[in-house]
Image 1: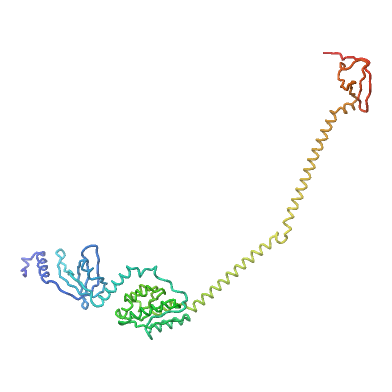
Image 2: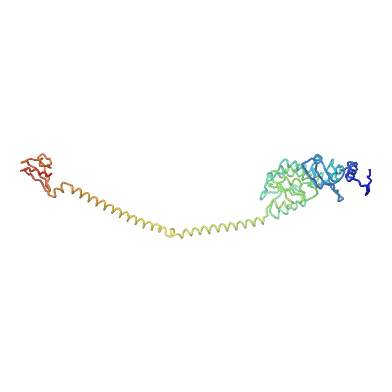
Length: 407
């Protein structure tokens, strides 16, 4: 019901807002075709999105429950969707928004959602993990090439490899789009992986639309690449194209030309590097020889090497000095000992009976051979033997005169 009002009798704002809200809610639900340009995920039951008209410059705020979004599957921003909406007016701000009751990804967005779901599945299995990536051989014996016959991709790979290195190829021509493409790519990968001389495999295709590149996001193709024992290089499309094979391959090249540069070295660059390495090696060896020669010259210039016997001169002089000191010490010691011995002999001789006899004394012995040392040891008329220095005398005691005691 329309509200009447005038400057004299205005209507309360809240009543007007409630009337608008009642009118909007009577509009009911409606399916719309739109593009999702923003999704704000939050830790709550209500999620916030922004829809935009695919033609006109118009956008609208949309709310949806987490259950509604999860039921729709992955929805990349930019996806085209069809959604069942119900308009709502918020009391406090009087703002108009739409509540999404159901959402479906349509067109290319539906395809993107399916591919995103497959990516999540393969990622959960660990097929994209970095530790699975293998290093490419420095110089492959033979390069396996999976591509369309006579395609620009084939020509780019062959020509750019030939410019860099004289490599050999094992080529498997396949359909790069269409219903049989995925199966033919898988068979080619299996054949090349079993080849005994193929050391690296390039899967090459030029750019194209999302639908054109679907074969290289096929689950079977992706798993065939994952089980290859031979390193695989993905060269599909251009920088803006990312089929799933790029994520599981051991190396992603942005273009077939880039793949050619990745799988073989540049011969001219390698020759230049070898030449530089040889120059550095020559310099290092020359420097080492010069250093060794300088060290040898320094050794040869030392006095001990110029005259090896010169080292003994100082030792000879020292040895002569030591000999002299030893001889002097021995002579001095012998002299000391000789003098001590002479002194001892002189003392002994001075104390000997012979020395006493030489001084005019005589040794008296009675007839029984006893030494007479006292007048009491003899008697008158007794014969005594007197030993003197140059012989003996036989004497007779005429008288015994004891020595007076002057005590």
